[in-house]
Every structure is written in C-alpha cells, then in structure tokens.
Image (cartoon, rainbow, N blue to C red; front, side, top):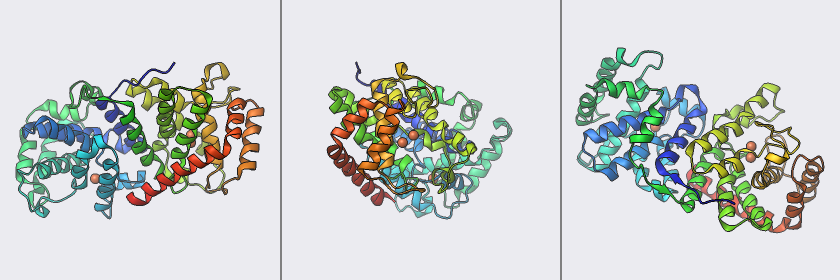
Length: 415
Ligand SMILES: [Fe+2]
Ligand SMILES: [Fe+2]
Ligand SMILES: [Fe+2]
C-alpha cells in the first residue's frame, strides 16, 4: 500500500540542484556552493526570511536554463557567447512551478550588471540579483585544486575589482564582511556542505504536498528531456502512459498520482550523460552503453536521497530491470520487481517505440504491440501489463499523445 509523500522543500531542492550539476565533474555542487554564498551574503544584508529563502532557492537553480552540459561548462569557464539566453529560459522554467515563482526574476537578472539597473541597490530584486551575481562569480573564481585559505584573499580582491559596473560596491562590502571568517571559506569547499545546509539553510520545515511534487517533477522532466530534440516529450509520454495503466490496473488514486511523478522522473539520471551519446545516430559502442547504464542508478540515488518518496524512487529507477534478472543496474528478478516498477518499464518501452529516435522512425500500433509482446513472452516485461495496454491501446495512446503535445508546446514556449 502506497503511503502519502513526506518531502521537505529543502531536501528536494538540494537533491535536485546537486543532481543537475552531475553533468560534469568540474561543476560538482556548483549551484549548492553558490547558494551557500548567496545565503551568507543575504543574511549579512539583513534580508527578511522570505526574500532570503527565495534568493537561496534561486541560487540552487540559477543555471537551469543552460540546456546542455557544454553550455553549463562554458558558463562556468566564462566562455559563453551569450549570457541572456539561459537567464530567460531559467526564468520561464521556474515560472512553471508556483513554489519557485518568486525566484524566477532573481534568476532572470543574475548576470545583469549593476550599471544596467535603473533602480537603487535598496530595491529588493536588485539586491537579490546582485548578491546572486557575486555568489556565482566567486564560485567560478575558486580554484578547486588549491586549498581555499591559500586563495581567499586573492579571491576577494579579484571580486572587488568588479566594482566597475558589474557588482555594486555595497555587495562587495558584504563579501568582505563575511569573508573575515575562515569558516565561511571552509564551508564553501567542504565536502559536507550538502548536509550542513540540510540542517541549517532556509526553507527547512516546508513540506511539499503530492500535488506540488507533481508540478516540480514536470519542471525536472523538462530540464532532462528538453536537452535533445529526440527526447522533448519522452518522459511526459511515460508519465501519462504509466499513470493510465496504473489506474486501469486498479491502483488507488494516490498511487496513480505518485506514478505520474515516477514517470516524469524515471530518466532523471540522464543529466549525467553527454549529448554526444544521447543523440548518437548509429549503434552505441560497448563503452557508450556502459555510460547509459548509469542513468537508472543515478535516478535511484538522487530520488532516494530526497527522503520520503522511496516508493516513487523504486518505481522510477527500476524501469530497466527485467523479470529474468538481465536488466540493470541491480539485476533484480521478478520477485523483487513490484507492480509499479513493472508498469513504468512497460510504459517506457511503449513510449520509446512510438517516438522518432535518432536511428529509426516511430512505430505503428501493430509493430509496437508485437515488439512489446515479444519482450513479454521472453519474460523480460510483465505480459499481463502488456495485455492490459493492448486492450486499452487507443485510449492510452490518445492520452499519451495529448500529454506529449502539451510538453512540446512548453518546449516551444521556453526554447
Ligand atoms: Fe548563469
Ligand atoms: Fe531509461
Ligand atoms: Fe525512458
């Protein structure tokens, strides 16, 4: 029996921010580190609790608008040709989640130079955006190969030299103020920063209800799927098909809603996979397939670390397990693969077959069903679920197509 979710906003936001920076080792915890700096500066500026919380969350997601790992790395190295695109996309993406709406404008302006504002620094949005700008810049300047207390003076003077229009002198003064403390610098680079924030950062104690979790899972799904034109609508399709099958199978309303989240997040681990592999037109090599195989492991690790959604984590992450034990990454056999995971596995294959891929065109009903039944007869996927899908094919196909069309429209609005 599925029990209601029990998720806190802080835990969820930290885990997702952490996951989004898994796409390159050079970006490890980059947004979490920026959020810590922004939080410290915001406290030094005496920001009230609500604007401080919004600044912190904005910093955790400030580069979500960067589409590919390459774009994120270019931003990190200061080599991006255009700084506006990812700010605009980030704003639009955050606006899709009511809980993140107050953070959207901060992200929109996190690269705006101080000299381009017409409002004074006392304006709350100006101050928040300027603090995030400094936090982002400082994090980029840190040499990850050198001990932080051997570089903090130089970091402060490098950032201080940006008063020529990029960052307001008052915000630089905030850094000089908090930068007197060694613990500030040691915390930024601490491997334990994640757990430190988990116990002390803003928005502790704010619970996320299942309805809000569904909306956040759509936001995350878009970050994953919009990376490649071949996957723009994939997880929207899986989510819709899986929840529909769950309902037809007789799962409760609560379980069906949780299934929507699991479908949206099943490929979350693809954040760690380069576009060159995701979009490859020819057959993957053994080495490339080994890279693909980590995605369900990452989905499992990220969702499990959020806490309070263990059932969803299992439904989402076991979609490449096969009943005979030949799947990955856990090689579970039928006894250990529950009905929810079996449903997501069938929904995933069903959706993938009905989509264009870099190496083949979308399949029609007959080909899709014969492919699925082949997998069912070989005891790889659950044949009962496949037969349920076949009996309701038109209805499921229609609803899935509608959900995918909606996802495509969101993509066109944002990118
Ligand atoms: Fe940025
Ligand atoms: Fe997958
Ligand atoms: Fe998938």
